[in-house]
Length: 126
Image: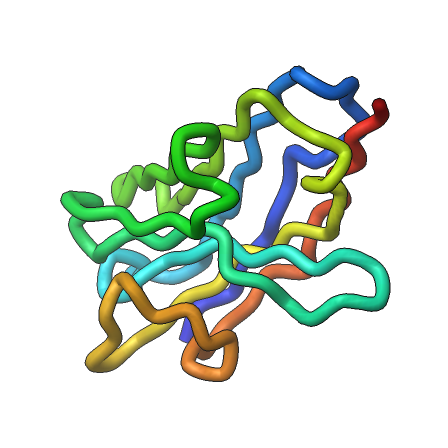
């Protein structure tokens, strides 16, 4: 079992950058595929990016590709999401998630992820 704590959200102008962090508890962090999702008001939770257990492979949604970078530091039990060139449409609550078992890094279905952070608000002003 792992507990996740998200942080790093805030208010930023369009074109700006933010880096989100997600710290996991326990000694098994490296056993999980990690991902970031986001949820805007009135919308379903949406996949953003995922990273394999070792950090060697990543996968992005079309909206994130080229602007966001997911990374992890297993020694620190932390996964990051660097977000650049932010747009007002990026405004949402961002959640990190962990998936155990046989899970591909391309898994976009939130129901396949076992553990979730509490979320951190990102607001991009125009």
